[in-house]
Image 1 (cartoon, rainbow, N blue to C red):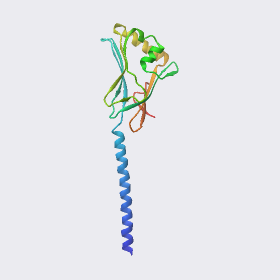
Image 2: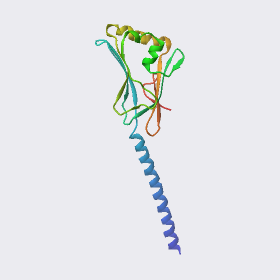
Image 3: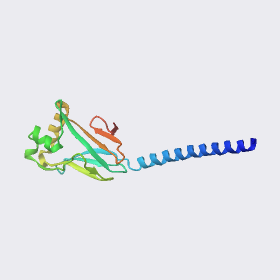
Image 4: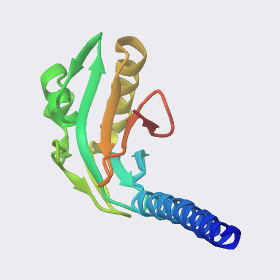
Length: 170
């Protein structure tokens, strides 16, 4: 009878140990799956005075698609749910005199891994210095800033803002 009890308790202990190992491995596999689709957005602003161009690009430097949830521009204490070029058209006269190329970034837009989205490209030629000076003045005097919030396919969420160099989880 004593041997039967030892065998039974050993079987229960081994079963519980196996269950613990199984749960641990499942957790590791879940973490690995989440990290295998981790998007990482960055904003790249390029000014080329030689060519007379100003470009704002959104880059996905991560290893999974980034799905845009929201984008806002902040200026003079107000929030604008607009693309950058639409904001400039509405609030300034900067766009009227320059050749502008832009793409729309709406909720649900997916940016694939290692891809970029040109948010604004201005060909200003010799007037580029004036354009850049006006944008910098908008930043210092009007508090021009932005927020781009996005998620992974596993619904992990981040926001990229002008105040931070890296996306922050929310």
